[in-house]
Image 1: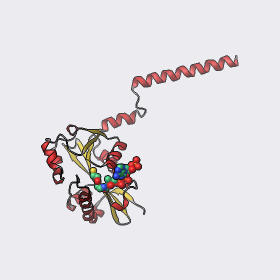
Image 2: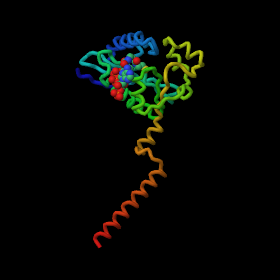
Image 3: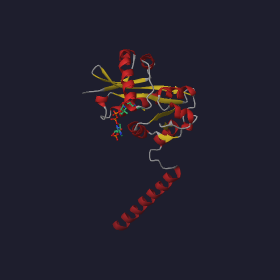
Image 4: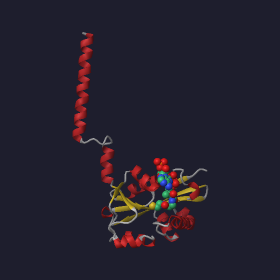
Length: 215
Ligand SMILES: CC(C)(COP(=O)(O)OP(=O)(O)OC[C@H]1O[C@@H](n2cnc3c(N)ncnc32)[C@H](O)[C@@H]1OP(=O)(O)O)[C@@H](O)C(=O)NCCC(=O)NCCS
């Protein structure tokens, strides 16, 4: 079945209850870390243009939204959910990619981060340019960590004074992304200079051999 992924808006408010139920069911199955979200909160995200929704005909099959922390210095792409019937088809990857681009558009200077126990999410994040970090590299905004309070492992997080838990923290720094985009080879200026020099030497050598042959 065809699935469309796009930025959610006012016309999708009626899907909020189904999304909240999907999140609740997934949290029960996994027994770990998906913070509970009220339909009204998801609707607010849709109204603010900070959510991505996936629809198969008129049925909601996936969702994710943006939250910002520490005065917009950090952005999290939270609440990623794919309907069980649509998993393993690359849908989460499409949703994450869409919400990632939306985050960079709305908050170009913010670090985009997430915490997760999901291998699939770690894989998607790595592909998008996130790297694993300790929790000290994430927002220290208490409101973010309060979002973990509905997780059964919240006591571990509190016991370690928010330094570690079962989730892995991952961050994507747009400043580092910009450097990579400007220099897709990943070579330093000096390495590029040396490579350029070697290339020029090779061209001169080829020219000289050609001249010798034609002489
Ligand atoms: C996690 C979840 C969003 C993944 O959705 P999905 O649509 O099945 O994921 P995709 O099909 O886009 O897969 C993305 C990548 O992860 C890999 N992957 C998917 N499920 C995986 C799993 N269980 N274990 C390891 N890797 C997995 C896929 O192979 C794919 O990698 P590839 O690009 O190399 O092929 C979905 O299972 C879900 O909604 N789970 C419940 C809610 C949840 O856990 N949310 C995350 C909270 S942090």
